[in-house]
Each structure stands twice: as C-alpha cells, then as structure tokens.
Amino acid sequence: MINTISPIDGTIYYTAEEHGPKDIEQALHLAESAFPLWSNLSIAERAKYITAFVDAIVEDKNEIALEITWQMGRPLGQSPGEIKGFGDRAHYMIGVAEEALGDYKVEDAANPDKRWVERVPIGVVSVLSPWNYPFLTSVNAIVPALMAGNVVILKHSFQTPLVAERYAKAAAKAGLPKGVFQILHLNHKNTAQLIADSRIDGVYFTGSVQGGVAVQNSLMNKFIPCGLELGGKDPAYVMADAHLENSVENLVDGAFFNSGQSCCGIERIYVHETLYDKFVDGFVALTKQYKLGNPLDAETNLGPMVKTDAANYVRKQIEQALGKGAKSLVAESLFAASKKDTPYLSPHVLVNVDHSMEVMTEESFGPVVGIMKVKNDEEALRLMNDSQYGLTASLWAKDMDRAIDLGRKIETGTVFMNRCDYLDPALAWTGVKNSGKGVTLSKIGYDHVTRVKSFNFRKGK
Image (cartoon, rainbow, N blue to C red; front, side, top):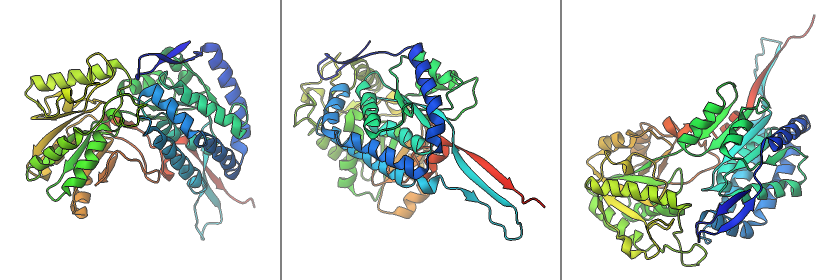
C-alpha cells in the first residue's frame, strides 16, 4: 500500500494499492491485445472516445480541485484553473489531430508512381507524470498518444495517485475499450521494470533531471522514443523600455504561483540598471501582500510546498546565498505560517546575488527568486544563457523587434514577451540542455507519438 501524506496537515489523505510485477504483466498483456483494435479506428472515431474521456474529467472539476489541493497543497481557489487548462489543451490537441496525422503526399506530375508518407502509432506507451501540475503535465502526452492510435499505461506520482484514478474512471465512463488506457501505482524499481519491457514502445516522462537520467538508463538496451520534460531555471529580463507595473505584477506571480513549484516558473530575474531600484521596490511590496497558510482557506494565495524535505532544500539554498553576501528583502516574520521543518515556506526575494550561488544556478522549485542588475542586453544574454537548463525565458519590453532579435540568441525552448509561466497548446513545448528532449503540444507534438512509414508504389506493366 502507498500513503499520500497531505502537506496541509501531515496526515494520510489517501491510501492506494501499490502494484507489482504481476500487475505489470497483466497491464502489458491487455495493452498489447487492445492496440490492434484501437489503432485501426479512424481519427474521428478515436476523437469521440477521447472527447468523452476529457469531458468526464472536466465535469468533476470541483471535486478534483479539492483532491489536488489536499494531495499537493495548492490553494483551493487556484486548483480549478488546472482542470480548465487541462480541458483547453486536450480539446486543442483533439482538434488538430486530423491535420497533424494526415498523410504527406509527394506530388510530381512527371512521375506516375504513387508516393506518400503516413504517420502511424508506435504501440504501447508509458506516461510517467509528476505531482506539481498533475493534470496539465500528463495531458500533454496522454491525449495525443491516444489520438494517434497508441494505447497508454499511466504511472503517476505517489503524491497524486487520485489523479491517475480519476483518469481511469473517466476512461471507463467514456467507454474506452479495455486495455486502451490503464494506470499502475509503481515504485521506482517496478517503474524501471515496466519501461524496460520489450512490449513498451515509447516512454514520456516529466520530472527532475535525475529522474530523466534514470529513465534513459532503463532504456539503454532499447531503441524507442523517449520524451523527457525535465527541470528549469527560467530567467526573465526586464529591459530598459519595459512597462514597470506590468512586469512586476506578472513576474511576482510567475515566481510564486503554486509556491514556485513549476518547471517553467520564474527563478531568476535580470533588470536593466535604469529600472532596477523601482522594479525591486515594486516586486517586494507586492510579494509582502501574499497570504501564506492553509490552502483550504479562501484568503490563502500561497500554500505549503509539497513536502518538508522540498521546503528545507530551498531553505538551504537561501542560507547559502545569504552566507555568500546575498540580502533578503522580505522578512520571514511577516508570514506566521512559515516555520522551519514544515512544508510552509514564505516567499523570499534575494538581491546582491550572483552565479556563484546555487539559488541562481540550481533549480529551486520553491518560493524564492534572485534579482540581479544588468547594464545592457549583452550582459543579460550572457547571464540568461549561463545555465544547464533551457526551458523558457521571458523578455519584458515595448520594442518587439528588439525582443525578437534577443530571443533568437537565448538558449531555450520557448521565449515569452511580456508574459511568463504559460503554455499555449498551439505552440511546441520543448526544452534544450538539461531541460530535456522531445516535443509535446501543437501539431508538432504528434511527431513524437508516431513513427513515419513511407509508401513507394509503382503501377505494374
């Protein structure tokens, strides 16, 4: 059995049955049996099933929001937004499936041969999903994989097992054929056994860099697609012509929403020297308005981190930075709920920071941000690129042409202008360097849940 400990009060919120080798074998057998039937359906037929599957989850958004809050600690007023985002992404990917999965035809009037390329499903795939945005991360792989004709085995985090069970209930309600979508509650050892099995044809993982390495190591003897959406240390650059109030408001939210537990959250900010003092003053003033506390309370907009260990990791980063000369501008005493050795951690704004400090180079995944003054675009670019990660970066400016020019030089998967911590399902979601490999979302996302098959037909004489 596995126990989900709620960060709200440290109690056991849910207990689920842990699955083992026999369960893995049964799931793989069912998946293999289901694949031929499912893959032979038309895209339109699959779309009917998957639309009903998605709608079954969205219909229960209020109950699900409460479950999310209890499992991982996000304020209850914010959790329903995840289900809305889940529905938006899913319906977009369903809507573009016909075009994305259509044949590529080679037209040549001088050549009577018939030539084309099809996108075909890869088979049985495993989706390994995290707790921080449990629906938004998993939907990126689950819906396109199913729409493309694959069958899916989902392994979700032990912190959010009810998310997997909500998916399973929705699949049953939508009438998905047996074996098309299954869930397993697995520990690390059994997860490695599942994905290393010869019957698994693709793996899509979202999580830490260390987790991504473990997934790749489990697949060393196989040549299958492996999508890895890993960590980030996402930078923002407030340029000299930025709208000050707008940049402050959005970057505070980008840094502290979900207690900073977002792979594309803002973790470091570089501000042009002409705006630096005013920006910092505004950022600190807005941060002090946050309410840290029980996420079930209506006035709370900053909940606990997922675990005490996670909060203590961030505390160590902060202590190291302060020991190297950083200065904290938001006193922890302003947040009564913030206590050592608990998951409750107040938001921290650090200045006098540099890249010798882990808080500016290693993923924090918590409510802390460092702010540095820069002289020009060249210095900002050098600092933004001085990272092992490259998921997103945001530029805050009025001059779009200048931002485009600078954005092309940033080593990242997505560049934002005057927004951050946001996914548009019409755009490819990807990372560079240690932020991973592969692509989800957009029409391009279908490339990574399919393989290509070419046809070169010549009429007989």
